[in-house]
Amino acid sequence: MANPRNLDIDLLRSFVAIAAEQNISRAAERLFRSQSTISLQLKRLEDAVGRQLCERSHRAIRLTHDGEVMLTYANRMLAINDEAMTRINEPQLEGMVRLGAPEDFATTHLPTILGDFARTHPLVSLEVTCDLTLNLMEIFRQGALDIALVKREPTARLAGVRVWREPLVWAAAEGYSLADDAVVPLVVSPEPCVYRKRATDALKRARRKWRIAYSCGSLAGNIAAVKTGLGVSVLPKDMVPHDLHAVTGASLPNLRDTEIALISPPALTVPARRLCEHIIASLEKGGR
Image 1: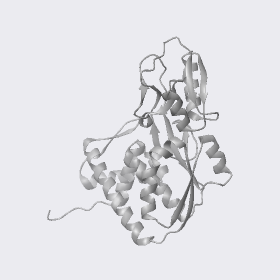
Image 2 (image 1 turned 180 degrees about the vertical axis):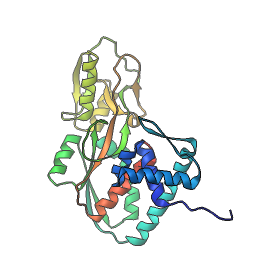
Image 3 (image 1 turned 90 degrees about the vertical axis):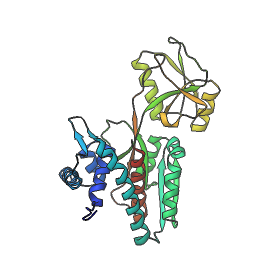
């Protein structure tokens, strides 16, 4: 190409945030910029490539085919840019970051993300606390966590940046069956638990009787109980183990999605801020 056109990394970062949030205002919140700035950056990127990347409606922003192609390259370019800048400018970043996370999310999605961060910042120590969301929020309020990943309702107007959207399903053992009029035996964590409340609220709306068949504070303990056929539980669709199955059909009511938000105090240490940025960027690639 005789006169190559260069893509602006800042514009790509805004575009990736818009694609993840499907909303200009939420993208602006994520990047700590104004809505007008993010809108302008999207227009500048579209002008630069000569293609419409997004379709706007009163509900959400959707990527066009060209937008989907651009998103793939944008994620790759941002990853290379951020890794290069981090290794050159902060090779000796040191300190400790105390991170809180729900157990199910911590055991499935976080290991790879935290491993990548540790390789880039080998002198930063990570202390991870796994607990129920309401307990994590209390620990965070007490100042014992630097940042926390917490479950919340998608419509909740709470502090934090959404980093993951979760479709929830009923999970049961292979071969487990439940009559349409049977009392539903639940395998859940003790209160307070977002998934427990989601299960009981859905059953109440459906006017379906239920009982707590087994309650354990450990995710592994609850999954083991479901495997033995003690009852059904609620899990994110992507986290259902291979030896369990999602219960579909009319036997149980549909469950509303929930989401994971990243919360942090106004003032963060540099290591904690870098971990926040890394988690957000990594989960954006997962595309929820």
